[in-house]
Length: 417
Image (tube, rainbow, N blue to C red; front, side, top):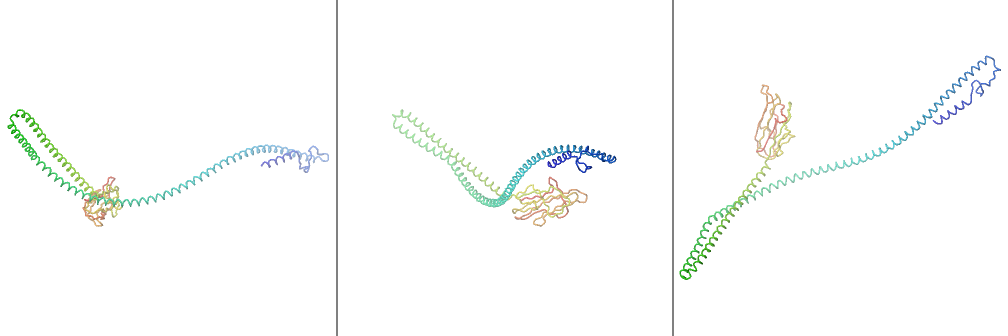
């Protein structure tokens, strides 16, 4: 662009310094040097007109050249400003490209980091799946061990109960013997006291007789010996009574101790009997408690299925009822009570059976008798003898639909007697 502008400028300068005339065949002549003497008047007029036109053309060209020069100057200024803007744009673009490259590198790094994290997450998911599988295996092993421990505990409990029964019988026998011994001691205490008193009395009498004989034989010493005898008699009587009192106290203490031991033994026997009864009750309760209540909390006006499934469970002791199929499977054999309550939808009628292994046992119905009765209720109850693994459920016999609310109306319950 700079070279083009310079070439135009040189051409304009040359044009201004040399006046080329079309009339003079591009020869360089001054308009004042023309020789008009050789020309006639008509030709002179023509040449004058031509010269005037040439003068006007030159003036117009000069004017146009000045305008062109101004335009070139403004064009140069515009070029300078454009170059500065281009330079600034280059700098800005360079900086932006550098920042974009940096951002691209950062994005690549983050992408690699995310890929690494995704790989780690996949590895963690695989490890988690393995852990879940291992936990399932451990859970099954634990359930098996728990079942084995339960059976072992039941066997051990039976042995412990048998041992406790033997110990209770032994303690009862011991208690009876102790009661007999205590009664014997109670009977012998008066006799012992009487014998002891008689022996002491005989000794005292013998001593008194001996002292009397000595007193009669030794009259001289009667006065001096009398006081000694009285003192000896008092001390001996005191000693005898002290011995008697201590003997009675020791016998009474022994009797009280025996009674206390008897009470302790009775309390121990009672505690053992209560413990045995509790263990027996708990053992029986753990193995025999089976009960459930299942409900429906929604209504249907068009249900015509086979099995009436009660998906909500209030209680399911023993885990016999299946909320997915609506079937109760007996975990243990025995006698069971089953109860069903069903309510019809609006004026529809519904009849259902309690079924044992596919055979209907009892039936209930909720129906409109023809008086446009609304929401009738049918109930029924049955006691069935079940073996382990027998199935009981509620089956539709006739009609359609049923009605219930958030607080259930249509229910199915059962428990073991």
